[in-house]
Image (tube, rainbow, N blue to C red; front, side, top):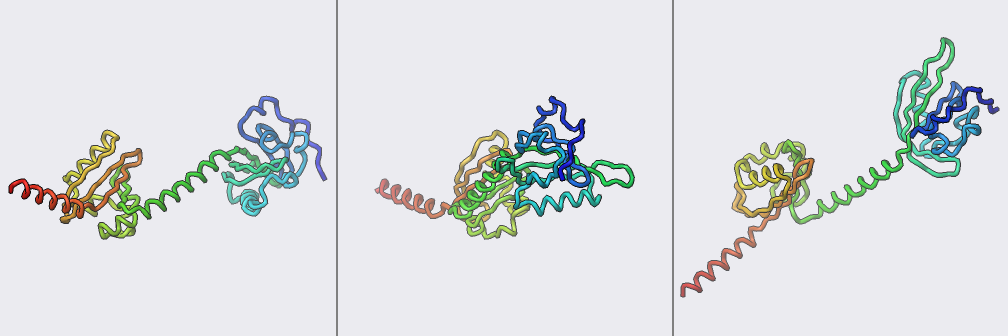
Length: 260
């Protein structure tokens, strides 16, 4: 049975300007406060929502019901006094949004069960951006994995954050061996080389560096591009030993021909 709302439960008009919905439910889940952005967010006017069971409004998306029930149960049992969570919601018109709920267990007189005060913020735009970022990151990870160039990601403390399959093949170090470890610990022979200098300069001035040089630990030649960012460096490299040898042989042949 729907309870009539108390006379003082209708919000002051100024509360409707709040960017968050403010909802209070009593021990039985009956809505006692419905203000702020509640009507804009869920489509129910205060006159329609107050005095009703919050479950009867079906605000929670059906796929998230079990999760939300668990959160509310933790509050009711006193395991937590304050919880923040996200779930999908459904408005009166059926529109689905992502919302962040801050639920606070309010103190009650001895012998009475406490009520729950909830602040609800629409975070749909943020959720969509996060989903797009994850998709882009997955696509980028796939590209880096398939890239014939070696790729090494470095943070500002020179720790390796990314290491693709081509890097594993060229430098004979597996991803599990290197990720999370400092570059100079793994490759101490790089210290003081032209590679080290290029990395330092890129981080210092924010401009990319590209160079070709012989590896200090082998007879191989590498073309290296270091791209700086706020997070550190993205280093792309390719073994160009075959091309360098071909160029040297061609140059030697030209010199011989010129000397005849």
